[in-house]
Image 1 (cartoon, rainbow, N blue to C red):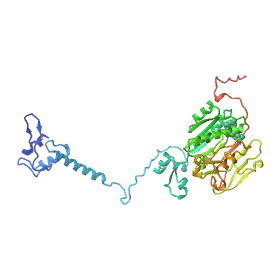
Image 2 (image 1 turned 30 degrees about the vertical axis):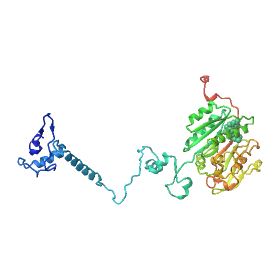
Image 3 (image 1 turned 120 degrees about the vertical axis):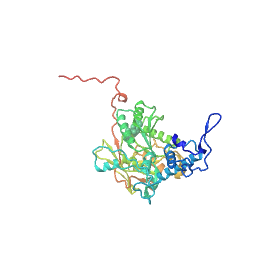
Image 4 (image 1 turned 90 degrees about the vertical axis):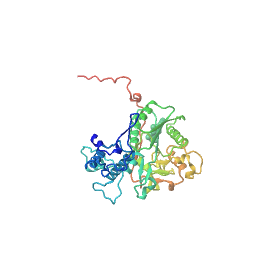
Length: 409
Ligand code: UDP
Ligand code: MN
């Protein structure tokens, strides 16, 4: 370094100022950073090369002006920029670069069949990733038939209404239903209604269910067991109407059996959807099939093998239909004539709750949608089990250890 400085031309020599500071010398006439050509008489032939080396390797020449530093910066920036833009490898220059977000899951070392393996190792595309994280359905709903995979529609909320009460079988029924609902892709709101009080047993099951829920109380008590369920469902309807909850409302009693296909199909309902159900009663020796006969999604008739209920306008079970919640709180949207709230009636005889409710919602079959397409199979089962009054430990918790059976040897 010192030897290089010694070779500098006189104009580059330091000037010493009275205050003892060394100031940068006045620039030489030539501003070229490695100006071997502007050589002073004392410069050796290798001076230019040395300056260049010093310039490149040491990177600083405190005696030069700020402009030189600036030029150097610009020069290096230019080199870096050109280097960065140089295409390496096999990039097809005619193709636009693919910036799609491909997230590859780590390899999973398990023995799986090839189809499952494909599913595990297949990269997740950006649209799928968005779909999963934003609750979007690809090509569902309005754009379902357009054929384009770019139709991203928010998934419809499902509002599942369940009347319930504490009894021995409740933990079994409510846990079973809760675990199915947990498998349904969100958004899903479970409205669970009890009479008089929020019981600790029900609250505990709901808390552990992992499902988004609201636990409501129906204050209207009734001596008739059938009417209790009706009033509880009405409490949920009032709640949906009051809070203008938006989604597909489905009445799911706690003791019935529901498939995931059912909840998937509910999301295709626009206004009013219905489907056939199977009723399993202990007192009968055959399954009662009840519900719409469909031509595609069009309802063209009804089926029931319950002779006592032939007078009903619509042969639909409580667990065999679902409605758009906006019908409850936005009548103008559906051109509904009566301004009265839509409710289940406790004044009609058993078996007529469903038809009298549906008559408030739609005028005729033309406003109905049969699901799944063609109504080809049973997707849920209504159980009529005898409600036996078992004695059981409350909440299925033990205050003290169970008594051990003494083994007689
Ligand atoms: N239910 C209720 N309180 C009662 C009786 C019934 O909450 O006092 C609920 C019950 O848990 C179920 C629904 O109402 O979710 C229908 O009751 P049930 O299964 O006894 O009626 P069914 O299937 O015989 O029509
Ligand atoms: Mn039941």
